[in-house]
Amino acid sequence: MKKIYAFFAVVLVCVSWQASAQDDLMSQLQNDSTAPSEIVLATFKGFKIVNIQTPETVKKKNLDFRITHLFGNMGEESGGGIHTLYGFDQSNDIRIAFMYGITDRFNVGFSRCKRDENLEGEIKYRLLEQTLDNKRPLSVTVFSNMTYSPKEDADLTKAAYRMTYCTQLILARKFSDHFSFELVPSYVHRNLVAPEDENGIVSVGAGGRFKITHSTSIIADYVYNIGRPELVPKRYDPLGVGIEIETGGHVFSLMFTNASGILENDYIPNTVDNWGDGGYKFSFHISRMFSFDKPGWTKKQ
Amino acid sequence: MRLPFILLFLLLSLCAGAQPIYTAKSGEIGFYSRAPIEDIEAHNSSVQALLNTSTREMAFRVPVRKFKFEKALMEEHFNEKYMESDKFPMATFKGSIKESVDLTKKGDYKVTATGKLMIHGVDHDITVPGTVIVKEGEINIESDFSVLLKDYDITVPQVVFQNISEKISIQVRLQFIPYTK
Image (cartoon, each protein chain N blue to C red):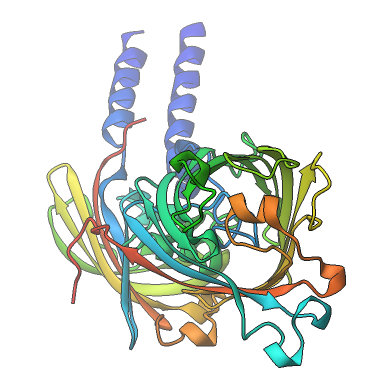
């Protein structure tokens, strides 16, 4: 009798197995697939918030061409006002830059700035990327650059005097669709400084993006200089605020900042304008992304 | 007492032999948007799908992130802005073939599939034409149809209206083989 029971038991298992196999294809599919940890996309929309770097990189085989414009001070106390059309008649700094994606995570770039005629070489590398499942709750990116100023100046007797360096760690997290935040500890080194100044500067930047409508965000950042000596003229910490408008392909940023330059090596040590005295400037950039990546298929016409 | 064992053996072999489930082994789903300013296309070869040849039911799961675009920026916008793939990582189709064709016999069958297509978290009933090609140990499914963005609550800003079509053509080309656990 036991054998009969065993037989029916096996029959039952067999039948139920076959029934379950036919039961729900969708749940079977779900059981079969293991979801990989997906990377969080677009923590920020641009490569910079206002002044400070973001973890965003140019994608592989893409070239970003960008012209950033930093106008003059808007407030009358700082040389702005109606007679300069609130700073629009002046251009404090202009940066023409190329950034190329060697891989999705590793970028190299070159730029030229109006201020000090700085020529800049830069690299950016995403060490870690934030994942959706929070196994990695934040992204870690390294930014480093070097500048060379070819300007005519009798004091610059050695090539080394013309160079500055900046290295930053960008710690960023996208908290939600609406809010991203980052902290940027950084070190700027200038080979030649005034006697009362120091060559190395440690600073911490903080910045965020807050989405207010489907395509509009408020952006802001601030850099706090740690232990800067008192200098003449007085140096201020750069604070930038702006509005970011997405239009599908393009992101327009309308920004206001008291930063005196566009490069980290410049605005971190050299910002002499102050929001309180009308020392804020309008800034924007135009950019174009060129893709050299070939799709893995032939396009159907 | 031998009889139960013989029956058991027969039943087990029946269980194994009667496995009517096929799984997508290779192939892709592509989509095409034709708009005045630009044509956009994307391809996804990470489609998971099952087909039951006896009930003619089918299930598809398409990981949205796996659509590959010509331009990396398009891909990011597609995921981040339009499909919101962080929130809705999968597009799915659950349905069946309407006609009572015998998918165990070799041949080409013009069929219509009907069921629920879920994109961007929105379910929509669709009925689409397709071809099922049954070969030895392999089934091919081909289907071309189109979907409207508004059916799936996907909004395109006015500024890029000229770049993205309201109607997206979808092309399915998948090869199925018998499913083994």
